[in-house]
Image (cartoon, rainbow, N blue to C red; front, side, top):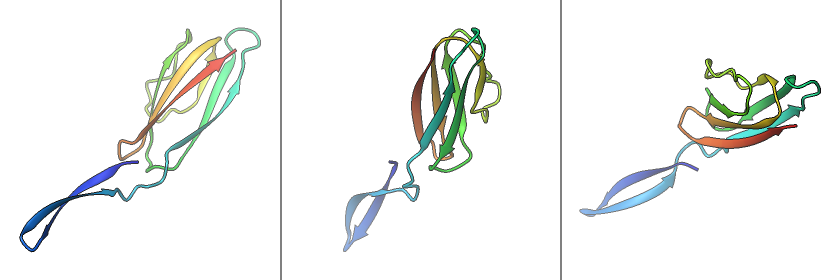
Length: 103
């Protein structure tokens, strides 16, 4: 959860207050993994909810060429066996990291 720092003046005294930001919705990533059958046909499909859209996705890992040129691309196709990592950022900079294994 992101918080905001507020400086409050009361009767000439300064106080610091830490309050939750307006975005209190948790960033959630759900996935559907299709494991490879012939060595290169695996898929990771994700659904992103919560946080504040738009979302930016960063993929890494595995031995397959990942579709990382488009930051809005949340799904990956043509995957070989291996571990893949996804970091999703929302508009406010909140993020979640996920680790997937295609078998």
